[in-house]
Image (tube, rainbow, N blue to C red):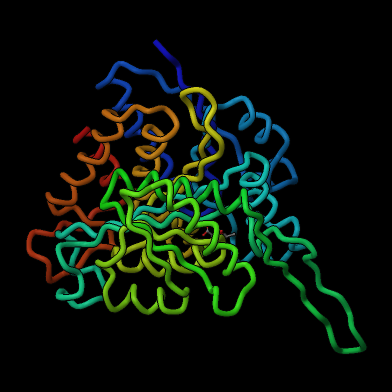
Length: 368
Ligand code: IPM
Ligand code: MG
């Protein structure tokens, strides 16, 4: 029996409690499909700083290096983050560092609004169509988040100048474009490529390269859209989108906007993928939401994003499609049965049962 080696980094805030539910579900999958996941846990974020003085302790990084994938919770605590230099804060020192270290250039964020949760979507029902289903493909290791120079300098007394650099090369755009077109082939065969080609050099190059790559995918429709218009179109007519292909910062922003349409960040998983070797793709799987310290430790958090992240892991890193589908189906069943954590609960919804983090995890594991 193959034993999948997985680094489990729960992190801060609600990370540990939603991770516990995801592990529960993975154990249920093991039983059902007679497979074995070797889940090894290690601290990251503030948990890493408290345990070993660094947001990404050496032992945690070593564990990631000898694992086949990383299941991640969330890091950062707004109260504590400002107390240390910005380079050492969990977002940069752990999250961005891991993305770069493992070359996780492709971030996939599926946004789905199940019809049962129509009430949680801020848009009027007529704008929701038959339910929303968008895949945001975000470039994750380039652009402004990593470009050099990146610094703040003193220009004159009382005047500082901050510099970030947006930079992309042809190969970086090509590889993420291929990910988007391939993903579109498995969906509704449409890619909307987002840029700011009317102002940015990066936008012009992005549009050219995506157009060229698109010629290899004659069966996929390609459309280009300026990022400001895309932000508006998401509010006006989100059903027009299938795959949205974005550079790093635009994808960061638009994926949160799209996420809001799905009712709650607590529902959204994500996969960050590196290069594929042989049959396996090294991947990093995390919920799209943050650490939510205000509700941490209170059994209030929605574990579904973390649970669906494990399903993405089974699918993308290990090609365990049947097991992944079992998790997705279990989540759908539990939603259909009316179980709701606070973020997706509405007192006016018929048959809705308000539940805690643990009860939601138990129900999904049982449904598997
Ligand atoms: C995300 C987050 C991160 C990002 C932050 C925490 C660095 O917003 O994953 O979308 O900007 O990429
Ligand atoms: Mg973000």
